[in-house]
Length: 401
Image (cartoon, rainbow, N blue to C red):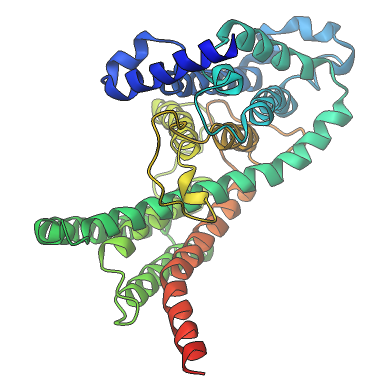
């Protein structure tokens, strides 16, 4: 029974690899289609958590009947977000435990990952409902753990972004493409640096309207210093990492700095033309939608990028029945992503506090998390470009001795 199923899986894998991207959506039981379904379920969980936070008190009056809700106070708002997040985390962590170590598309675990959607949807719904009957003590404990899990997600995402940037640079500077890509590299790097400088100048204009905005001045100026540091180290003759990688990393840290300043709570005096009205405007709604979609896309793209986290690189060519991406790692990223979206929606504050509708990742804790993430990104990048030089010099010294 298992042999025939495995054979069909192997044949299916060949078809999936040969088919076009659009034709993969015709078959619901293949790993390429499965990742989009998991991402859709993750997006629905995000939207459900937001609905519970912003509109739950008016729509979910039945929550008052649940024992652990204490008149709906502990099942809505910030704690309601944590309950939805816990259900999402349990589902993806269960999938992680049941699919980790899968290397071949032949077998039951691969079929479980790519199929059995009726059973998994029922399981997902059950895991979403269960946290709403748990006592508030359990939810607060999960909220404390979620801070750590969200940090793990940010670290995984950070390594994935830097690995992609270095891979793109190595690909463009390879012997086969060096001549053709030289002009493209210079144009792309120039555009990156221009956008970085325009972004830094714009932040000075919009977020430093007064000389008393010392913190914003520090954030923006230090970002400029880090950009210069990455460029200087990358262009050092012993490192020779090129000009493209520091330019792209500059875009990344300038964007993080902008997001951090945008997350400041009550920063009206340090935002030019900032309105103090609590009314939700269309820009806030658009920003919220973009932030949610960006979070889902970032989780999805990081989840399928398991090879950059392998401690030992395997140069052996892929076989036809090898899994196209690490199933266990994919679900682990989504599990930590569930903790991360909870922290974004509650501003990294697990206690009961007023939250403005249609806002995401607002508060001083959110600001400092982003700033620390920016500094950590620079440290990781510098280590990735400097470590090979240090290791080479160390081997030369050992060889000479």
